Length: 158
Image 1 (cartoon, rainbow, N blue to C red):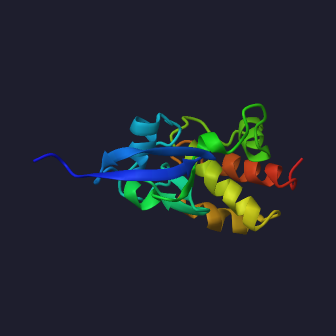
Image 2: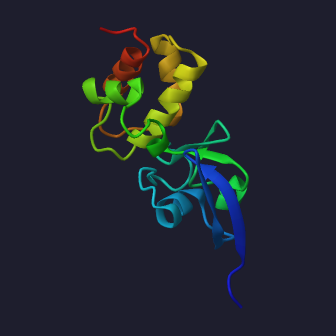
């Protein structure tokens, strides 16, 4: 008997997508392998590290714990959807200019979480940044560059 499938109709980074996927397909795998958006990374596969973070109807979710079927009718934003085709968002520029990334595994989730923070609190202090970003783990930077990058994007660091 063939594996059951579901028909999805959703928007990904503002673009419509419709098709069938296996009913048990995780959102991270759907985005990477069915849609071809490889920016979303799978780090821990248990929803702890934040590397697979995407926005689902505006909320941050771990795409390694979310079935693709749960995105039916939704708006999904991945790291590829942060900026337009020509210009980076301030948070993306700040991560580049202030060393907010190294290996790149956690960067997509870090960027999406940081952008959500700045939309919630345009000028967070260091404690607010650290508390918000606690769900996104990084094994390379020691977090100083990430905090500096968020401060810079908020206009709070030279």
